[in-house]
Amino acid sequence: MNDRLLVATRKGLFEFTRTSRGDSAPPSWQQNALHFVGEPVSAVLPDPRDGTLYAALNLGHFGVKLHRLRAGQTEWEPCTTPAYPPKPEAATNADGGTSAAAPEDNTPWSVEQIWTLEPGGADEPGSLWAGTIPGGLFRSDDGGESWTLNRALWDRPERREWMGGGYDHAGIHSIMVDPRDSRHVTVGVSCGGVWQTSDGGTHWRPAARGMEADYMPPERRGEENVQDPHRVVRCPAQPDVLWTQHHCAIFRSTDGAENWHRIEAQPSSFGFAVAVHPREPDTAWFVPAVKDACRIPVDGHFEVTRTRDGGRTFERFSQGLPPAPAYDLVYRHGLDVDATGTRLAMGSTTGGLWMSDDAGEHWQEVSAHLPPVYCVRFV
Image (cartoon, rainbow, N blue to C red; front, side):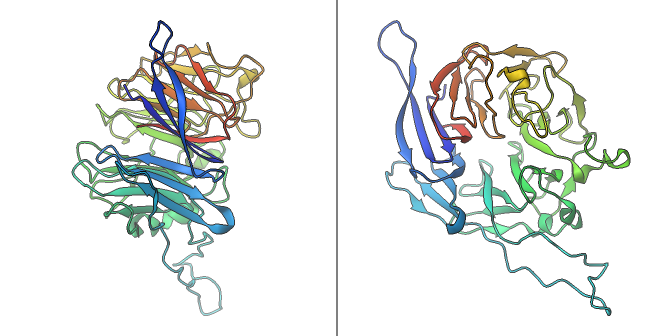
């Protein structure tokens, strides 16, 4: 099992380790380090290939920063931050208006936030992917020393229709590299659907067929480019099975995102976080909430749901979580499962952190007083 946890928050990056007390009492989780004290850490990546840690910071007026801690070292070092090229001037027609062939791009060409960081394939040492707001996908092939915007996706005409959900602009929050083929990459966009490449990013295609955006007019609800998958995950052992917690429901694909099927769950099919078992593709966890303006647990009852049969039925667990009324919300990256599929970590916007050692059925409070949690990841 993974005995180390990274927790990215609004006020720093916390590190917890699991320790045994040497008696009949169960092991406990203890904070053993705090990095970037007081600074918002928007994303964190423990690279399983070489043990390097990466942390993205969103410093507001001072911009977005990226840092790296190499295995065996004690000092973080700055990396190059992903950056957009200069924005081209809009093409104009003879009347001085925007050309129909080149519609105006109202998206800022600047990184407002690094929303997710993921390693490249096991056969690509030093490769990294970064998803940003406003919807750019960046790649590094030298461990963060340099970054390149993937223009093939950014220049797709559909990108100009992407829109923000909770943020002013669209963002890429989910990046999944197929363990069978490092050139096969899937990304999730809020709001812009799911996109895939099979050639390392040279060409992209939409991959959200079957998703339904209930917030759109009826004639547009099935359009792939307007979907809002809040988080997308893939089963490592069976990569053709993917799950997403969408704004309007839960969706699942069993054919590599060629088609998605809608799933309704109680008490709600709305939420942000989803985790999938690393070996059992029918097992996934969710944190239900009331959607749109509320975004709180249903009836103030904070719980985790689990399906073990591909979404046909769901179990509901709350033992060890705060009793009602509780208004904890779990962000997209606030839920993680370790390599065994039995240990889970969960952090909330109200600063709660919980662990489960039995696949989500019982939870242990690790802390109730952290800053708002953006991301939890096992090392």
